Image 1: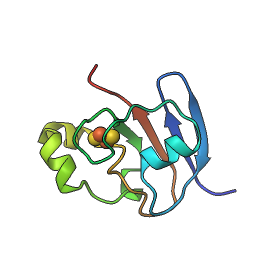
Image 2 (image 1 turned 90 degrees about the horizontal axis):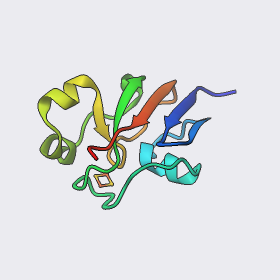
Image 3 (image 1 turned 45 degrees about the vertical axis):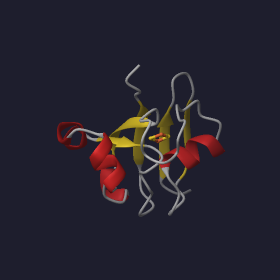
Image 4 (image 1 turned 90 degrees about the vertical axis):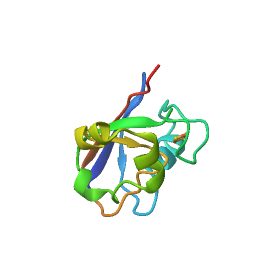
Length: 100
Ligand code: FES
């Protein structure tokens, strides 16, 4: 039993196994969680999510996230799911929160 990642989509919530090197969005797609996305390159922000626990298990924000998100959003724990890569196995809770 590994440390689970909880993905909270718009209607679907799933607890899944962490996979180092995958993004939050990769895992949401793989496990059929209804997560917003379009570009997968860090520009559309449809995959925006708040990391409610376990930020320390993710790689730090990428340049794309720093360009697309406000500093305050990053401080509040918002990430772009397509850019937020699992760094280490651990309990993470991520909730998809698009702007619209
Ligand atoms: S899918 Fe477009 S920013 Fe992540």
